Image 1: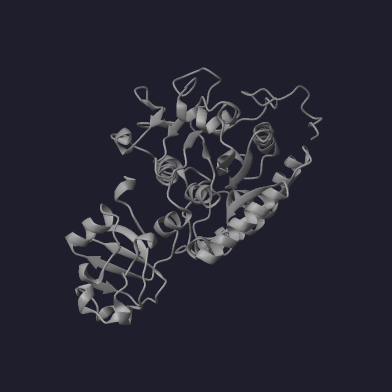
Image 2: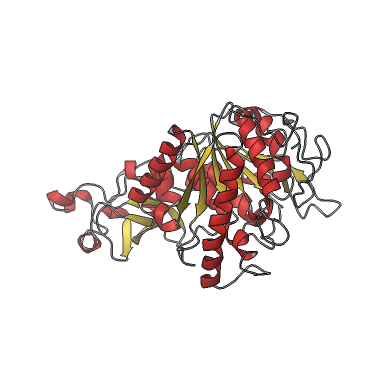
Length: 407
């Protein structure tokens, strides 16, 4: 690998040598403030992760005039390159809409879908060019992977995306993943690239997810407030009690609330998450000593169960009685017709359906074994009351995933 000729000395693990790079937010120097200098077994695990997804937000990639900032991207790529000596890196990059605003003469983020898509169409070109230019300093090639929620919702398309990303890695190219804003509708969007990064981290069997924000980590309130408390480790939902997270900024849609939600989503799937500021990318990738760590669930979901719970399109709903809810959430049992009180929607065998309890709360999802028309005549019946061809479970335990153990 070659070394950039425009930066002089080797990159410090804590600072970019591009000293003129300014990132938004209150990020400080190494060791300054409560968000720095942390150690834990989970941070060591993130440090040693072999496959890492790194998500970068819009504000970390663009200037105040809404054009792509080459210096910011260089700073990020320098740190990514240093980590690539020991890890595979997959980048989830926001910024397409923001990067298109400047060239189109837009002074604020568009709110209507057509203008957003137009901005994304322009911005994706500029953004991809800057990623390619910056990684080329290290003789590395990038590949752009654009996804929609519909891609993730269909199992065959999700597998195709997974194969594409894996093949890019095998060919030593850096996958740059972004939501395909040019074709995504308002009804079929990930909502923000934070959620997309959580889905990608599980889709690619990543060992860690690093979410780069514009603040040093998670605080229980706005960090600008003098009594704001820094949260260094989130081991369960109990550690989030009393935390108030805000919405997105001028050019992004994520905000801290979105990042916490994405971190919890990834951790439920067994992926540890480090949340910190883009300005802290050096120590984040070097030793994970900065920001907030979200501990993963001990029992990592299979790729299928994670997809079924958090990505899949659903064809209908099955409403259960309380006994059936207990059986499928705590007993690891298959769902039988006797426990189903109502089936809603028109679906075919093999589709994913929502499974809800008598109070209307969604308790899980599963792959249904019968068409909705056939299932209608089976509801509430014991297995021995059904014809021979209808005695298999409505949803087999192997194809049923519940939320009960993912709190």
